[in-house]
Image 1: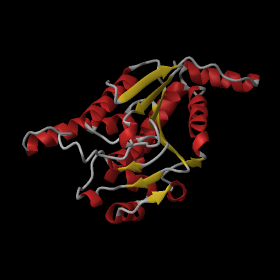
Image 2: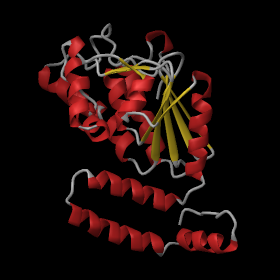
Image 3: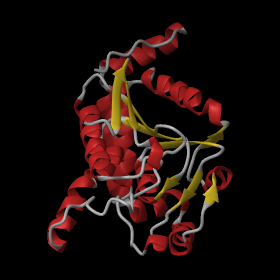
Image 4: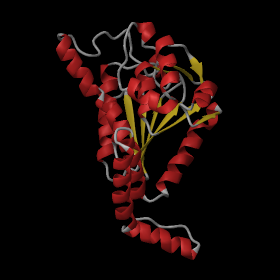
Length: 261
């Protein structure tokens, strides 16, 4: 990691803060690599169970920094494609790491930043946040997985509208489209996200991981395959000590104390 990305892990929650506030946290080479490194750190830390992804200052992430032409290096076309494919691991980690990822969208969210938000498991936004896919206006086709994730969040027709017209839209519209779970007053966003993170920390860790796996797998497999996967994971989690603890807590009318086993 470097100064363009701040990583903090505390009490089971890792907070990753994009830190180029003077540029609305637009992506340059350092920020992109820092995001990959921070997400790798969170994914590989057994003590981390929830990841909050947000931006410093008044922006979430304004997308690629068009004033930094060396973002993908100065090599030939194939080498630049390879660099981008490597950096896009950030989106893979947001979506596939066995932790719950939350995008706390505190301001402008565009281009690659929009794709990062779409890759997270949960999205909450400040009421002042503005959104746009942005790529068309920059003469680009899109990266960081947004054209894959967005149709699965808001539906194909809405995703096509948002990409092909590239209009800006508000947090209220993002909530209406189903892109974000909730719009909050600006000064209440992080308090709400912290409360969600604490709810997740109180849940059975293995069950959370398996639910996320089921949801991810369901995007690409048949219904019968999904049923088979669900049956396997459901029985295995049901045999775990945490599941037994959940049953004891229910019968005893007390909060459960999960161990992550």
